[in-house]
Length: 560
Ligand code: GLY
Image (tube, rainbow, N blue to C red; front, side):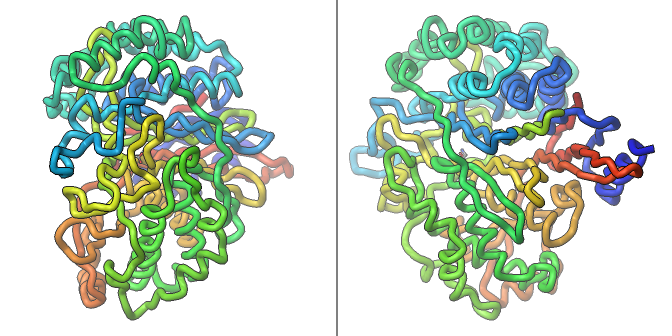
């Protein structure tokens, strides 16, 4: 009886949505929501084997390196946010600039940015952080043996997995560097990766030394020599993942915890929420011109602050407390007028390099109430397009997330700042935003998304859709998205980009205010979990995790 009541409640919370999702049919079980079904299953299998959320997240991360090579990775980095009964912490496994990098790395003799060099060459690769990040997370919270967590990924690489139509199409479109030698196969065929399986086995046997030393390190450095890259053995030996205190704030009484620098994601999300909290979005109407204009004005200010103040916190003093305070939000939001748009030129100094959007995110909760929100990336789709020959994995092109040329407009006409200038050993600024939202002191939402600079504006929209507009999690994730950033991208003076064209009247009102209305491709690929807490017929409190995978992608939930 109690089970039925809880199940009915969970179903009700998802009614009316076209989002693929699963609802746990029994209590006290864990759930994962991830961007690729084989990887979701790898995470769920670890939960079934008695692993906790961090164990499952580690297995999922390694499985994504096999089955989602456009963004899942060994050769990239990311951020993992963890919730346990003791509170929240996070792991920063962001890539670093190699020791031989310098601030003019991507400039020619005349001091101009060399097009494509920070994206499509071996010099675009930062020192990978993923394996060190997973090893650190395991040391802190792992409950199953490390080798056990690598098993699903090794099996998927060794025995292969069936290529789906999306992956086959995506592989066929990759022709950069040596990627076409590796990304082969047609939909329905098995995709086997023997070199990658051997690398994963070395990592399983030796932990971080299976990647940062010995055979794998030798193969990475050989690839650097062959392809003109600068990652050296000492860069690999010195790489360190870091445990960091997450940033924290609130939105209409809900506690919000997210990633600290070197990601801008958490600070930007809190700034967006703090400024919006001063208004009542439902009064304006969902995606009305007034609502869109208000959010665009807020986003401009957040992007301007990001470009000026945010960088690697180990090398640059990021004013976290000030940027995330309610007082600062009040001051910053004061000039916003419903009747007038702020011209981009009137927004304060600083600007941003263009970011790639092909990151990926997964969320996990376990039966004990622990949770992981993990965002990981190679930066661009398939990173720099260079596989480490003999080791079978792709390298990132994360160096492009630095400002290639601080203080001078780059090829996109935008300016970067000192805080994010290239320096040896430095972490490049990110927008990744793995997030937890708490309701009445208890974990409520676990979420995140890929999308470069649209990451924190997407997480923001999902939270606002859920909290203010009363949408179910599934609806909040599925709802059409828009994005505005500063400085404007492209030729138009001040564009707002939409996934779906706004209604004619809304478009006309925005144009009257001076915005250009753009329609673009999908924004984000959210994988989220909501913990539904219900009182059963006998008064017991029941806890049901409900997953929502973005209909924009091919993600799936999988339960313990
Ligand atoms: N490379 C995308 C990000 O870090 O935000």
